[in-house]
Image (cartoon, rainbow over all chains, first blue to last red; front, side, top):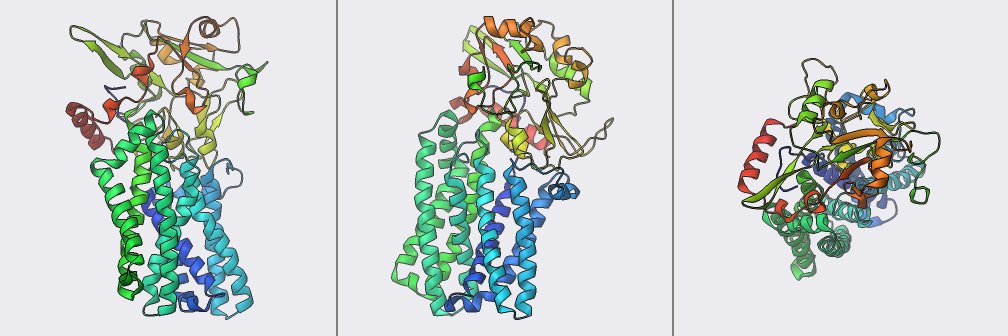
Length: 285
Length: 235
């Protein structure tokens, strides 16, 4: 309708995009800690990456609970009599809890220097960590009425965004460890490349979709949201760091860190604009 | 209908089950907002949120202009996305009747059902209310389940001065809604979403019900209204 007497709000506010950002980094940092058991270069990251992952997991949990209008009822999601397994949120809640439990067990096994059990928990935790960006992507994908969200790309895009943001944070933890920085640079380059390829595809399918998709494309590529999505998310936060990492300066510590900073800013901007972009048109319906 | 049935939750055309539906004859709607008022009174619906609402669009070129009204409410879909989106089963579908209802005591307020509804039919209740202690959970139209189970018609149907709203069991071939749906051209909102909505419109123009380019470049006065609304009704 062109004229209105009732307006509608976006159901999911920007808090969700901060949650997507922190949980993605938490998952990727746990994966880096796991890699330390199998790749010598990552050994220095074992504890620091895990501790930061755990802190971010706690922050993410609080953000998620705080965003509920009935925060005390978050326990309902653990009630087997209530759980509805057709909802990705139910799977996500269980995934989050299992990841938290495995993280705690991993912490104690690392403290006990039990290498065998630590390795096993690290692998199990990494699989659960992989589930976190996948479920956040599915959270959006399943809404068939939302342009931009309703694409099979979304879970994979969130895995790539998780890896790129996690590697960026890890590069700050790496300090002057050159071998580790080389590996993290590769991580950032390949996952940012994957993000860029998926964004091109996403923009194409959105621009050539139905009315809702087309209008969403217009909202996301112009005005304030366009500035965040195209300007900060794609140009400054994805294309620029890729070019920087490919340049000779991008092989030095300063270059890697600058690229990491840009990737983090871009990762947040992309998550925010995709979350808001999928909801903006329907507020006018 | 059976060849179009995709999921076991659907009840339209299933023998022995009732499937309530509403037909809205837009040729009869005069935009009096009586339905909105009756609904507000029936359920103590708070200020700023609506279980049913009547948006309008001014069409034509001066002096030949008219207002097109399009009453809206929960479509009580046969395959409701809100039911599958709710992580705690707070939203459910009544098998006999097809009502989509809420367990208020289960709702955690994650707003997944609001995000999944293509019709914007769901809203968050405010933190405090004067007469009712159901707060900070998602709410929506119930097709007046409590009235229908006592043999009464929904409040908005009873109050409609133009008799634009007709309610009944679509699975009963003798009902007025079944006759209207089978004999007159009817439309539903956003059929492409596959939700199988059970609010049928007579005389609906999709040019008025679809997203238009006007939303991309809304009139300044609408933006001012929208900002004022958002300022007053946050959360």
